Length: 401
Image (tube, rainbow, N blue to C red; front, side, top):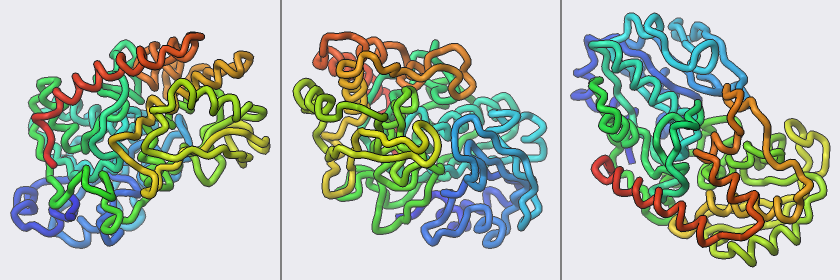
């Protein structure tokens, strides 16, 4: 397959459209070619195009920031001597001053197909701000969605809008960022000039890769706690643990695949899930896991919990439902350990009042379902399917692959 950035590097017809333009690049460490050359280096060293500045998202252009609400500063690139502006520092939207002297913004971030992964919010903010400025274009250099086409979760209620949810999108949205840009432009009636440089030979539901062509692309962390493809496949569920007092595995070698807390009755918790929500264990594998985080929640304490495996030998994307599965574990933990203070308190991603789990899930309904003593698994499944089917209908005109 050929990435969007690679098409721009290879195709004279695309380059000719940008020869007289001043360019800015939005990028991070995973913005690389299939040969692992960073997009900024490739554009400046391998084309006649004029890149005058760059922008870095959450975790920084260099990917150095570990956690949420740890900001990056602006700096000058030491090799190319161009300014690099942080979109996760003093501002999270590009200011008019930052965009001054730019004709076209090239957007080249690797996403993981989940609403709360903040690169989608960065794209949305950028589209809105470019729309307010006349004469500036946006080119999205498209990349794979490692979670593939499956859709899951509730559509965001905009009363819970935040930096981890900026549009009416379900948790696992099934789109590439290029497709998402096309949808958002139409959804909001934006007028900005938008071009999506499509990938070639990308097949998001082709076995055995299902979204990520492993034989053709190396996995480069798009953020510090996304070290493996298997993280991305389940992130639409595992990220819910961030909204709790449970450890999501930060401080271990398998963050966002393992979760737990000291003293959990793992056998009782697993039994509840298998008895009431066994269908949601399909498409993956489950293992009881003990771990001791070296930093973050429960640093230096032995935690009991679980690990979800989405390695290719277990992974069935059409059957795997991480949002439902992780929700079921939260409900089981609440039932088995009613004394455990489950929910994380604000602030979370710059939101000072709303409950973090509500921000993540998109409204208060997941939390209410978890707290209800009745299983209500079928009712919850039906509620989710309503939003999922609505979203699938919405996005049909924007699918490029």
